Length: 501
Image 1 (cartoon, rainbow, N blue to C red):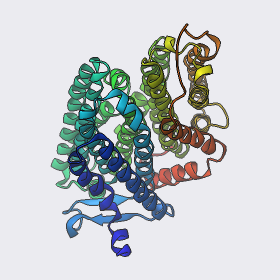
Image 2: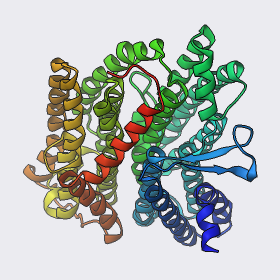
Image 3: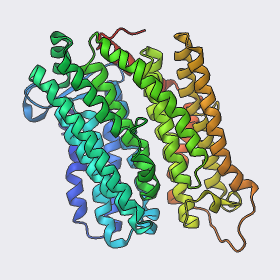
Image 4: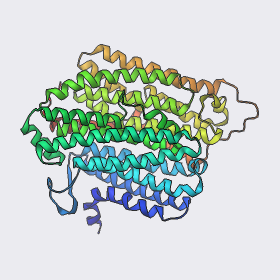
């Protein structure tokens, strides 16, 4: 029995939350739906950990859906890279759902909570499916499952602020445009190769060589995924979506959705377009790299002038995506390692910060930074969590943010790009400014007269502090995360024939 379960773990990773979603919708009450969704997330996390351990030595797990061998059948393919991302997605779900119980009770009417948790499980299904599948069209299908459920989750914030509806609609429009570009690109690849299996696509594209159809398909896929991961300047959906979504949704989506989109970009860049493809390398160096640097500064500058805490953190996320894309654009092992490890490091840091924002909303009823005057004395544990996570966002030593920026700077120096290294460090100074604005209000300003604010409940504080603890733990001892990222980078490089620098 155990052997059979172990053999089918790749399928169970996706099938479990997929089947659980309609069952959740039948449970009748929000409390039962929450407990069921939380249990499912714990099991999904355990499966992801098992797959991660199984692939740590470089093993690649290939699972044939329905017994149909690839490339004819759909293959679930697990290596170090996507096992790492599976752990991020399922781990964040396993932390956000326990956190969600009290804040969802506060932000969403009881009669809508069952549907909320159902949509959450569907979103989890989509993100896990995108990560684990080895079929290009399956990526599109699971992207749409996660996107459609995310639109619903963001719109559920309308009970707190009606602008969640327009935020969701804007995301729907831009997400649909991105998905359309992506599927057109996949269609062009299919037109060239006659296959949709990613590994098979890589081999046949390498044999086919460069062509206008291939270049057009590459550009369509890059733009489509760029919209999904909020690559500057295709990020316009993100600030409102993060600001007006329910707090638990923002914490989960900010920590996972863009990371999965980056994973898709990595997979297509180096597994499918992984031959000696000068057009791809030129696009990374001449388009992606400059846009990444602009994002690091422009988004951080906009964040400084925001009065809403969630909107400030949303613009910060756009800047952090810039760091991830910068490492990718270096086309070196160190740069790629920095990008992959920052998927985890930013998920931990930004997940904690948005959880803190939810705690503040729970206590004050507002996400305005000015509403946080003197809150450091009323909510010491919550505010301390913000400060430590803010240190990580800045990139101070002993936090995971420092690890990411250390490897990014190292990658720039290896190439002799000293100005880029200085820009990476300079952009961190902007993060100091917007983090300090919150710290100043929390600790140096007097509390409003008559304000009654209590510390957040333990069910919200414990998941928040677990993420804070992880940001410090893996900032002090980064062997596991950097080792996994390095092995994943090595795997991507060895499977591609791009002219690495």
